[in-house]
Length: 251
Image (cartoon, rainbow, N blue to C red; front, side, top):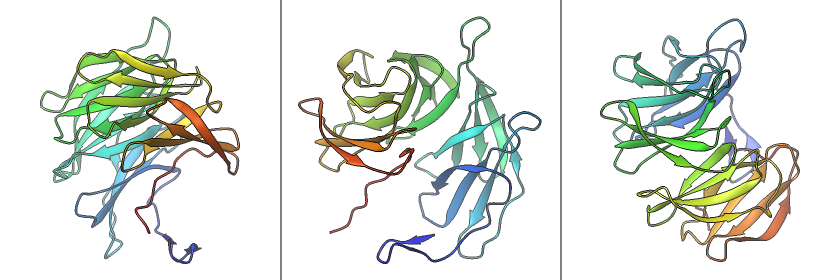
């Protein structure tokens, strides 16, 4: 836990297992959901929920191999977990603390799919999944917990962010080193730019939607991207591997 005023580490929360990866707060801010990658070869990962006021940790919920990012529906009832090496997404009911559905993803014959990152729609009806070993974002219907559509992207969709009007999706494509913008209704590619940092990672938009920020998963630069001109306008030097990020709503 980092105090954002002093920039100092003030506490540590036991993660309840090896290799914590994905983190998500429940909508009321009272609980933290954590994916634990476990041993990527010999044992599947799990998900545990920490009650922040007491430190209580739920028993582990087994999911697939290498669970990466996790997202919680706006009503706080379900958790979606991207299992990179199992080519599945697990759906957890938080009240039951149990998996209620497992959604499979398929790559080409003999190839991997690699569901990695997720984004939940504002109304909670869809979950968008970046399939990082392929070139598409899958759309999950949360009522049926099935893939109902795909959006063709560059190779390795990684970071996902909605436009301010929620009509389009910004996607950083890891392996093709591009950022693209895609219409959510039609799947049409609206814009694409290849003059970005290599291995572009997770992306965040400013509140006004005018700029996007994303780093390089293995590099030492972060792009400041103008979403209207659709071009990089500045870069920021970072530590190696500026992967995950957020934008603080501070003065």
